[in-house]
Image (cartoon, rainbow, N blue to C red; front, side):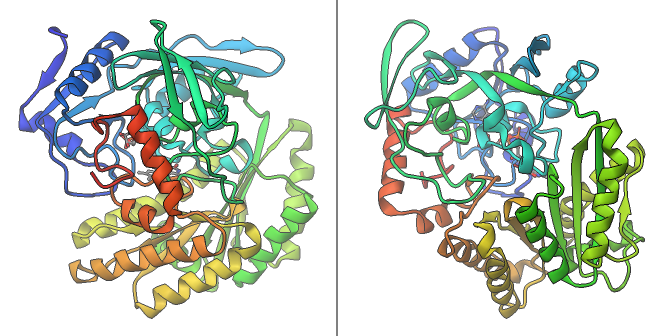
Amino acid sequence: MGGMDRSRDPRRIAPYLQDESRWSGGRAEEVVWPECLDDVCDIVASAAAGGSALTISGGGTGVTGGRIPSGGAVLATERLSHLGPVRNLPPDRGALRVGVGVSLQQIQEHVEGSGFFYPPDPTERSAFIGGTLATNASGARSYHYGATRSWVSSLTVVLCDGEILQLERGRVLARDGVFECETQRGGKRRFPAPDWSLPATSKYASGYYGERKMDLIDLLIGSEGTLAVIVEAELRLAPVPEEIVSGVLLFDEESDAFAMIDDLRENGAVRPISLEYFDERALDLMRAQAPFLSERTRAGLLFEQCSSSRDVDSLNDEWLRLAERYRADGASWFAVDAADRRRIRDFRHALPSTVNQRLSRRGVRKFSTDSAVPWEVFPEMLRRSRERLEKAKLEYVAFGHVGDAHLHFNILPRDASEQAAAAEAQHEVAKIACSLGGVMSAEHGIGKIKRKTLAALTQPETLARMREIKTAFDPGWILGPGTLFAP
Ligand SMILES: Cc1cc2nc3c(=O)[nH]c(=O)nc-3n(C[C@H](O)[C@H](O)[C@H](O)COP(=O)(O)OP(=O)(O)OC[C@H]3O[C@@H](n4cnc5c(N)ncnc54)[C@H](O)[C@@H]3O)c2cc1C
């Protein structure tokens, strides 16, 4: 461990005390930059032996404060950045082995031209693959492709005693409430398995993932840096679609947009890979960058669908017919080339960026909800959440992955005096979703800023089992202290 770069210089520590949550409670005595698996084993074993805290850092794009340390050391993963060759797995899959410090942007560039791509795309491509594994990141196209978990076939992790576990999907399944596995050096390990079932939503990031007979790999994915350090992963790649048909449909009445989604879900006339929603307030916020929006526009839907070259025109016609049937307004537009498709992606990315810029100017942080519910109760969740926010007279926008009945309310305090009301409303909106059979977090996770909501909205016995799992993996509670659970 002698040659490893490490620093106690506050200037080198400072960048690791923040992420996109703008949470400001971070402190650390040291940052360490491992360059290989053995370095990680040494760092973890020595932190465990000394009982000192260790927080794992990825790209710092997380929005819940998970990588922000609460004392001790930061394990910075950026030098664990090797990229293997793209392998072809007939008939139609690719595979890629990566170190966790590689960004999503680097992965997409690396696989370009291979005929494959890595589907999980949580909008922000400077995220490291390690951070996306630890949060089971998803994004617009998860509507069709699923979240990160669906695209991982193996993981190499370092356990809290410094031992290495190599996990192939399908090899370590829960039996009688226990995972039994063997470390690389042949040591036997037993860990309690989750004993709860997931709600009937298509996404989940509300504490440890749990289903009966589950795979250990799926528990470690989404564990937010609290159970083990992920060092390497084998990713699955999907074939690049020949064409993507996409567009932005704008509506004068929100009910028309939702009626169209009902139609898509029930009749399957078209099968989008993403279906994103923007409410009137979100569109208002983007007006300066989107001059095509009319004064009357009350709701927007952004869609993408894979197509063969042969079917592009007929598919565009099908979407056009739907747009007419549900009275989409004349400002709606369809992408005809790659530049248009980029414009659509930029349009989607512009909203969180605009929100963040506005809040930076105000010197406050945003309060964002991340709930998903079963589709049948989505309109009720929306109505009750809006009522709650309007009662509190808070400024907010609503947008998100409507195909998955998953919505973000971003609450924008006008100044510091509104922060307490915003925090309370954020909690209440999550509670509304849970009362309707949904989840408080569908993709961003809990980190440090939502742990109180997790504690309040999770069944006590489930929470107790989660803590038992944490203790079995990390007896000294050294990894990611303050994330998921109060320290
Ligand atoms: C503009 C914008 C849009 C976004 N949109 C989405 C979206 O649509 N969907 C979505 O899911 N997310 C979204 N995010 C959130 C963010 O990009 C994801 O949470 C991402 O997965 C975090 O990756 P990271 O490398 O930045 O992780 P970090 O923020 O560095 O860390 C996140 C968590 O992972 C843990 N961790 C990191 N690396 C490891 C490792 N190697 N082993 C174990 N634990 C580790 C950390 O301790 C921490 O708890 C968005 C963020 C921004 C800024």
